[in-house]
Length: 198
Image 1 (cartoon, rainbow, N blue to C red):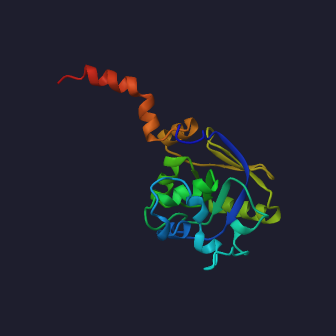
Image 2 (cartoon, helix red, strand yellow):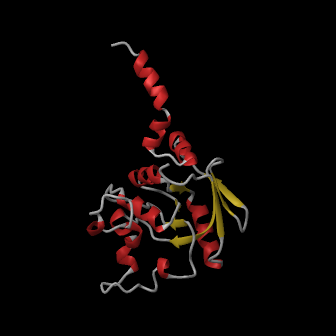
Image 3 (cartoon, rainbow, N blue to C red):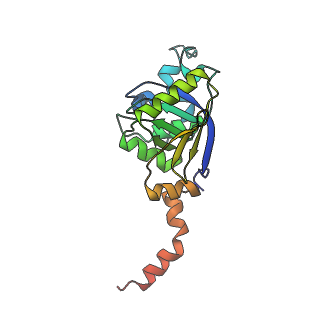
């Protein structure tokens, strides 16, 4: 199994109300040397989280103990810029399982879906409601139901539906990456190959 199954996620959220967050801000280029998915969470938003002397910047949200959870709520156009898959790795390795935004860059969205991070695109109005709810109470929880494709602001009960590719949805519900998906079809592929005329 490539990663944990994603069915229903109920969690508080970390607000990052900044638009046009690009992949170089998510994981700076100097940290792209590793080829495994481990350790990137330490450098998620590195230049926003730490001073040049490696001391934490107290004002940055990831350094604020008031905020926690498995959901990151980002501003419009999250994950723009270069196509580095390490940005999605950093988000996952830090502990986030869902990113909510009113718009995602396509490549970042795809990279997230490949490794078990669910990108949930909502309307600008619903995103604003989420930010206001978290501002009023940092422990505010969201519920993401992948099967039903809904996101609910539990404090008010308000919800929206979100879109997801059917193939990626099935993979996430099962915790599969593309290799896992093909592996479970191994016998079907073998049978097809044997029946195929030469």
